[in-house]
Image (cartoon, rainbow, N blue to C red; front, side):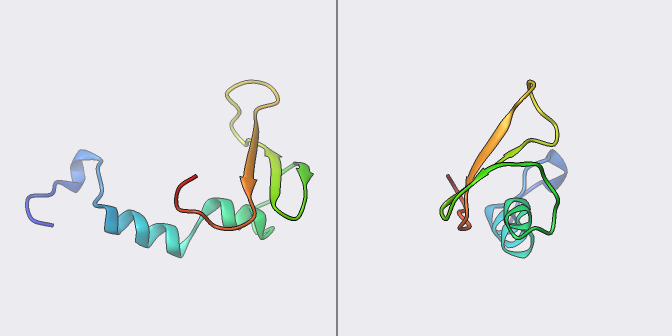
Length: 70
């Protein structure tokens, strides 16, 4: 991308999409490759405790299918 400065901490969208496709953190959690404390799960969603909570009990509720944006 002409004139793009990656050192500014901003990456082009193509780099973001490529990274999401290769390694999605949420998909790794859903697949069981990253251990978490699951609070609730059903056929569509999984709720688990955040590894670095903003407050006690901070829970992430995510869909079981990959989504680039929620």
